[in-house]
Image (cartoon, rainbow, N blue to C red; front, side, top):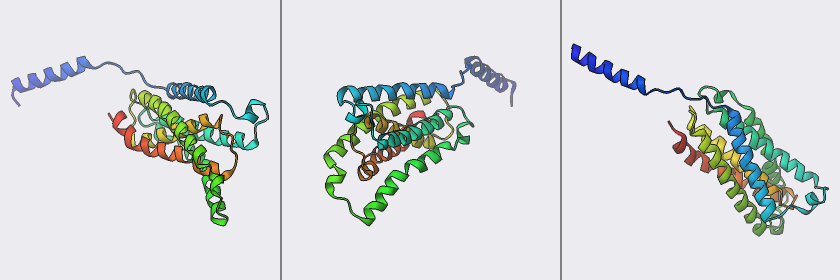
Length: 217
């Protein structure tokens, strides 16, 4: 290599070094804060525009409400934390707690499927018109929550955009459904197994397809 070529190469390297700037390390708490704020906003919007289920308003909510809320929030928080943790390369891959939360949440649709196989539920038990509202509102809330978490993730460096997409989708779907849960007055397992599972499934697929293109680096 001639001296001229070496000088040019060294000059280019020096220019690249001069352009380098320190990058602030993202903390998962930042992503969780964004997720929490948007989830609270979604819950508040549901309560404002649709109202609060009657038994909850009277302070005597059905036990299924608490069980459903707990499972959805557990799944949403666990997957959101796993996604936020992926903003730091090499760290997010160590988190596996969300898998157990997903298995727990899967008991609802699994139970509904087994009961349906034993005794097919009547159409009125599924409440299609109410279920479609559940699906619509939950998905809209998931879009807001997932959009905020994805925007935050763009500042980081996820080493597996595909996995991050799944996690963002599941988290936003679960938290979006949890927001609608404040209004939803129905407690039967058939309704829950179908209409509270669909938003999570749809959001997970959408997250896997869309999010990796937005956060890839």
